[in-house]
Image (cartoon, rainbow, N blue to C red; front, side, top):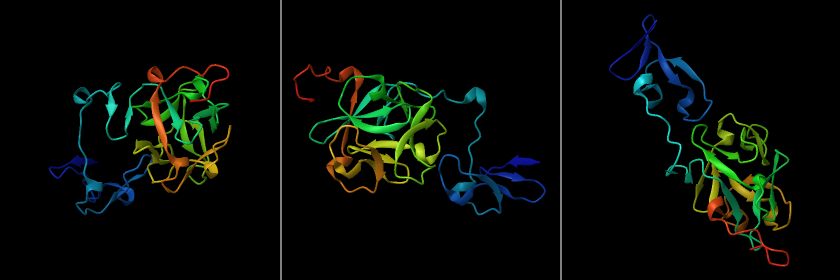
Amino acid sequence: MWKFDGQNTFFNIYNDKVLDVQGGRDQEGNNVQVWNRNRSKAQQWKLIYVDKAEKPKNKGFDKDLGLERNRPFYIVSKLTMERVVECWGANNIILSDFTGSLGQQFFFDPVSKTIKSQQWKDRSMTIQGAGRSANLHMTTTNSRWFQMFRYKNNNIVNEKGKVMDVVGGRDTQHNNIQVYQKNNGMGQQFEIVYADEMPPVPKKGELNK
């Protein structure tokens, strides 16, 4: 048996323990438990009835995550050849010459708050091995911390601070993309270019820029 009190807590009427976000960690997939009262933010809740809940915004700019909602974009490296990030075979994420294919297009999904593939829309950008690896790939969306990224100051930053990085800073076709500690190198600098603003695919014999 539970009650919601004037201090924004849900408490059990038999032992007075309250709903508590484990460890106070505000991250997707973290456990909710019962704990002794300590009046922390991790024990405070807002009760919103379904008929009063705001509908999620499906368009426009998300200022917290730095991306337009549901607007396809390319992730363009600031290395010399200006290659783009590509989802290869619905799995690995690599650096590639620009072709304009759907595998090179991504979009920010405001519901899951993840970066998804425009070609494989059930998959989101993910740090492999549930965050234990450095490799980036695309997997089924689950909105855990290892799928949470924002775009800030030309970096694509994971919730825990590591950033998208071209392996070794090597500006070569099909080089892998990973996450790495931020070092301000050019291999970590990317521009978001929305698909409706992207210059056309270079013609044969032109430089890829």
